[in-house]
Amino acid sequence: MDIYSYLNSLDIADHCRSINHQFNAMEAAFIVYWNHSITLRERHDAYREIIASMPDVEITQRSYFPYHGSLHRFLEAYMDVEDRIIDKFQTYTDNTVYRFGVYYPNGIHGGLNEDHRVFSTLSAALAAIKAKREEDDDDEYPDDVIQECQITKHWLDEDERIEVLTAPDGAPRRCCSNRLNRHDAGIHNAFDDIWIEIPTPFKAGDILYGSNPNQFGASPFHREPFVLTGICYWDADEQRLERMRNTADFSDMTAFGYWVYEGGEVYAESMHAYQDLEYYRGELTGDKRILIALGNFEKGEIGPVLLMRAYEIMRSRKHYEDSREVMWFTKEGQMLAGLIDKNEDTDQ
Image (cartoon, rainbow, N blue to C red; front, side, top):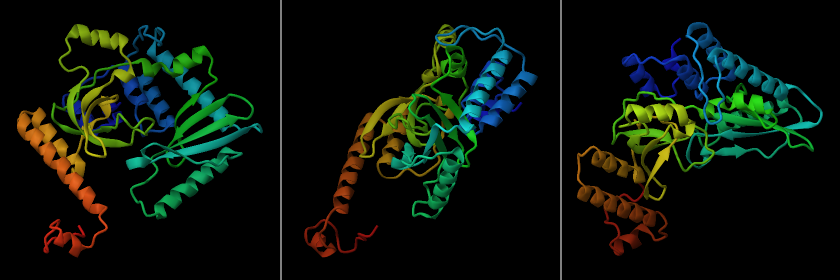
């Protein structure tokens, strides 16, 4: 199978393909599991292809992931759990209701935007999602295209629910239930307890596109540029790598770097899905331009004095531009005060 096509990052996929990196069946299953765009049906088809075409492997005991003598049998059990969750989610019962929210990829809309209506059937909720998509197509924010939906089935007077992430057209991508027994829950949550090493083409100082570590609850489609300073396995010896393979989990798939707050303040943080990173190919404007200086500093192209001076100038410029935006004085008044000259275009 073309496992590279299941990597979320085209840059990492191209790199792994170019060096002919070989993933074993466990690693391939992990990559398929964390793909953000395929549907649940497509994920199960990929698992069946892994079972049919890749040698079976053992799954060693981990913190929450019990030992399995056969990855193939584990994948069969995993698909069975999900099939039962989806069947229960889609089956009509008279003591349940549905609610939904949608994820947008950009700006303040990057988190879950909940609809406050309650629906008696799944088909009614799906119809409302379709209407919202059509409404968004016609509004004044063309970049706010729904990337993913979350539909929740609630049991009335009971603490039971099933959450399903779907594609914009309602096709299920992921599912979870708060009423799984311990055995099924262990199977269904197993991939959260896995860490693997995936080769990347990136170097310190590269400006990359990745999930915002401060946008809690955001869709993986919500990403921002940042300057890379490291990836969790860089400079690790074989002993440490083996320890990470045996004890680390998905939250340890980290990359480190510098991000920029909306107001221009720089902060260092980590993000938890380095396998999703891609080169940032957009234009850096406003506060984000400081990433250029930070990246070149990390690469050794400029020194700390120029970096600090660039940061000071950019922050001062931003403060000045923000002040200009809220000024209620006329252009003539600003000219008389020396804030602008007579040839300056204040409409830009």
